[in-house]
Length: 178
Image 1 (tube, rainbow, N blue to C red):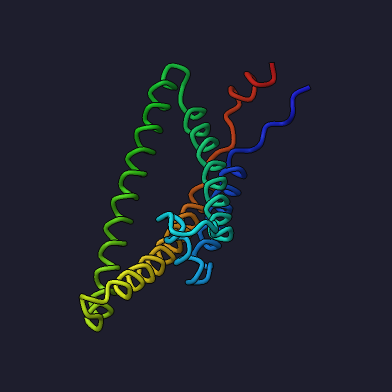
Image 2 (cartoon, one colour; image 1 turned 135 degrees about the vertical axis):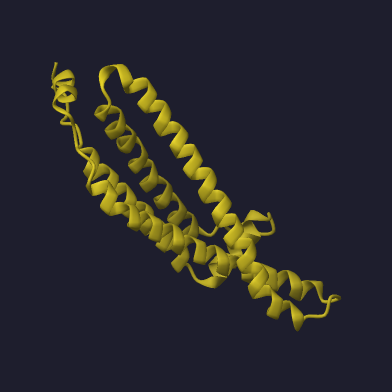
C-alpha cells in the first residue's frame, strides 16, 4: 500500500516556517559567532561555527520542503496539455525570483556596510590594517545577521499565500490512486 500523500499546502507552510526559523537562528547567533564564521570562511580558523551552520541548514531544508510541493500545486492546476508549459513557467519564475533576491540582498548588504563603515572607518588610521580588517569583519557579520532577518520576514510574508494554495485537483488524486 502507498503512504498517504502529504498535502502541498501543509508542506509549503512547514517549509516556510522552517526556513524562517533557520534564518532567525542564523541571525540570533552572537556577533562573535558571525565574526568567527567570516574567519572560518576565509580559512583563518579551523573551528566551524556550528550554531550558524545549523541555522543555515534548517533554512535550506525548510526552503527545500517548500519548493517541490509549490511546483506540484502549479503543475496540478494546469490542464493535461499545459503541464509542460506550467512546469517551465514555474522554473523560470523561480530562477527570476532567486536572481532578483540575490541582486537585491547584495545591493542592500553592500550599501549597508558602506553606510555603517563610513563612521567606523573614519576613526581608524589607514596604517592600522589589523583594526580595519576587524572592523570590516564586524560590519559584515552585523549586516549578514540583518539580511537573515529580512529573509525570515520574506518567508513569513509568503506564508499566507502558501495557505491559499489548493491541495489537489480531483483528476490528479485519481491518477495517484490507480
